[in-house]
Amino acid sequence: MKILTLIRQVPDAEARVRLSGNAVDLDGTTVVMDGMDEYGVEEALRLRESGAGVEEIVALAIGPKRNEDALRTALAMGADRAVHVETDERLDAVSLSQVVAQLAQTEQTDLILVGGQEADWDSQALGAATAERLGWPQLTWTNELKLDGDKLTGRHDVDEGNESFEASLPAVVTTQQGLNEPRYPTLPNIMKAKKKELRKDDLATYGAQSRVKFVGAEIQTRARLNKIIDGKDPQAAAAQLIDLLRNEAKVIK
Amino acid sequence: MILIVAEYSGGKLAKSTLEMVTAARQTGREGPVTVLVLGQNVAGVATEAAAVADQVLVADSAALSTYNAETWAAAAAQIAQEGEAHTVIVGGSRSGREYAPRVAVKLDAPYLEDVISLSGSGEGLQAQRYTYLARVTETVEAQGPVIVVSAKPGSFAAAAPAAQPGEQYDVDLELPESRVSVTGRNVEKSSRVALAEADIIVTGGRGVGNAENFGKYVEPLADNLGAGVGATRAVVDAGWRPYAEQVGQTGKTVQPGAYIALGVSGAVQHLSGMGKSKYIVAINKDAEAPIFKVADYGIVGDVNEIVPALIEASKR
Ligand SMILES: Cc1cc2nc3c(=O)[nH]c(=O)nc-3n(C[C@H](O)[C@H](O)[C@H](O)COP(=O)(O)OP(=O)(O)OC[C@H]3O[C@@H](n4cnc5c(N)ncnc54)[C@H](O)[C@@H]3O)c2cc1C
Ligand SMILES: Cc1cc2nc3c(=O)[nH]c(=O)nc-3n(C[C@H](O)[C@H](O)[C@H](O)COP(=O)(O)OP(=O)(O)OC[C@H]3O[C@@H](n4cnc5c(N)ncnc54)[C@H](O)[C@@H]3O)c2cc1C
Image (cartoon, chains in turn purple, red):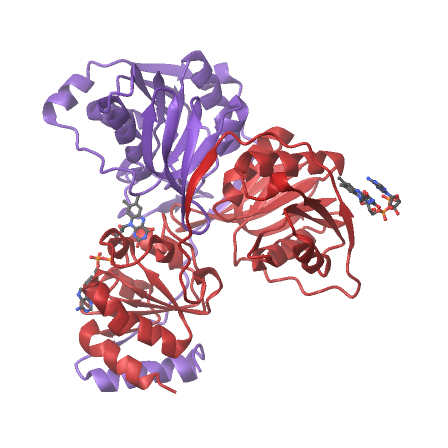
């Protein structure tokens, strides 16, 4: 049983996002592994540690050269090997799923773990699109997962509340908070990770092309009023705030 | 035609369906605006949909009694093909964004995800959507004989009923067996105003102190204002409130007229779920808290002192 776990590298949540021209420019921005993908790597490791018969965990990133760092982090956490489809081109999630699906087939993967929502493109589509291409079922927003033989059980969030589920491998699972607490790589494991295989693939061999054109980006900052009241006299401050909401903003009656 | 897959809940058409009708009309693309209703015993939903659409296709069958990603995708793709739809619009809910990519793959169509605006552009569509945890607004474009779109809830005005209701037609579908079996359901519906439809939301963060204080501060203030109650992830992780109330990247996205944050620091992941609110109000004892940077109104002070005063002042 083999697991493919998808890795994206995104700006650190505290980092400022800058634009240059009509696109986001990440030069000089601190980038980290997407938190939702950390859940995926961690879950793969936990499934192995639970004795579920996991033979290999492969980390996959598709993107620019700097993604190597995120892949090394995945290897240091405990993934066995990494594949980097290196490209500076931006592909939409549905086009990208072509690459993932082909790789899953050549790697004879049984389970694909994908972040529930990407912290850069805010997309939730990659897992579902990959599952469709492979003809597999999918479980999204998963916060509990167990594997016994080829039987998956667990719990995932739905529109209102959550559901417990059962499904069989092969399958695609997307992550959600609560799934686990990702581990920090230890120094010896960081050293070991440097010797693990990180294969480079050429995007051209997958024949995937973006079907969505990215024509522009803006940072729309809504001008906020910033009327901040000192709360030393709570009654006066509260009365003033309610008055502003009632008579200036007119949002309460 | 433009195909919209209806969203409904508890036998009532959801506001998001009316929003999708507006999105469809804004494209200016030709053909009837067609709403597809999938489910069992959905005659009432279909009639509500007919009030705003040019036509309604109804697939009423036991096989559609509960939502399932693979069934919904198969149904939408089949109807899109038979009806030669050039645009397929799905709701930007959690479930909509789960099956829409499957529809796109089945139709070999480009997919514009979670869009906040939509317009026709040559042989295709142009849309805007948020990226980078809703800090950036991107413009995207797709061309092709058929394009799949998911529409972010709350981004389009609700369509008003037309002078003449659209015709309703029953359709038959060939549906795949679901390969995921649901073994348990835990419906976490807040007993209060639904967050997605609330005009005012009062959210408590860790600064509220404990679960009991939600009953003492957050709920009474929400009651006075007729508001929904929200929570930060820190509060949900601590078990003070149900996940259904979580606002943010991994919770709900909301856009109320007023968002009142009590003891919330304003982390990026939280802002990504509420940053587009019309007015943001913050109560926090730390004048440097990031939430004040995005606030229209605020009080620097202790929740324990300020909120009781707000509850008093907001009584009608
Ligand atoms: C999957 C699917 C099933 C549909 N089933 C029906 C249906 O059962 N009855 C229906 O009237 N419309 C049906 N329609 C709607 C139909 O295709 C037209 O969009 C709609 O009738 C508007 O027609 P029109 O005014 O553009 O005229 P036209 O499309 O030129 O149609 C002329 C007449 O033919 C009839 N007609 C057209 N398409 C169908 C069809 N697929 N099956 C049966 N009669 C048809 C209509 O009654 C209409 O009055 C269906 C559409 C789809 C996508
Ligand atoms: C992948 C990922 C996804 C995430 N998704 C979400 C999400 O969906 N939603 C979400 O909310 N978070 C999310 N987070 C977590 C987020 O980063 C923050 O940790 C969280 O929002 C903090 O919640 P908080 O503001 O309640 O708590 P804190 O950050 O601890 O802030 C508490 C605030 O209360 C103030 N305070 C304390 N006591 C008082 C008092 N007595 N009176 C007044 N003010 C007081 C403090 O000054 C402080 O500003 C996510 C994180 C990650 C990594």
